[in-house]
Image (cartoon, rainbow, N blue to C red; front, top):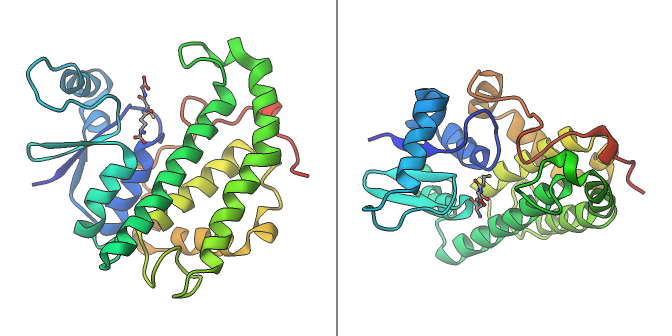
Length: 244
Ligand SMILES: N[C@@H](CCC(=O)N[C@@H](CS)C(=O)NCC(=O)O)C(=O)O
């Protein structure tokens, strides 16, 4: 039976980390909201989240439905899918290392979100522009370097070689790191302009993921939405400055 992915329509958002894994593996899945049309699909998603009868309803999308099982949270979905899709290490201990890396990505994504919504999710960006500017400045100066240096170091110190973040084969974390780099380049092109010389291993990982046949096909397809200013990664020129 095909996996069902539930996520907001019209944006890559957090759903994209799951899509990349499903696409790389060539898994059968239905992007429910997108394929059913905005009104109907979103209605079906909200019906699950607001159900008064269903046990273990998710708090927020993305969530994955596999038969009767509903799994929320990107890192949790990938922990579940990884072994089934051949995108997790065989070694049990290393699976938790990979999960830890993915949870670090979850933390980073929350910080990316806060660059344009530092005060409240319920307010428009336009209502928190000044705060967003201050938040983005520190994000560019301190947080991008801290997170990217960390991932660069993990790549460098991988005992199995620096081609992948963990072990000697591709995992879902490699795909997520590709998405992180893509998103940052879209949102902060000035800040990221010299990223490949600062983080050469991450840059090489990004390029190798981009060239994988299933990923390359997906990126060219209409299933891959363009980044826009409704998603997690948003490009507001006024928030982007050169990195020091
Ligand atoms: N930790 C969750 C975060 C989920 C999340 O924040 N989803 C957003 C969309 S990207 C949402 O709809 N949030 C609603 C809310 O927090 O009220 C994950 O990684 O999946």
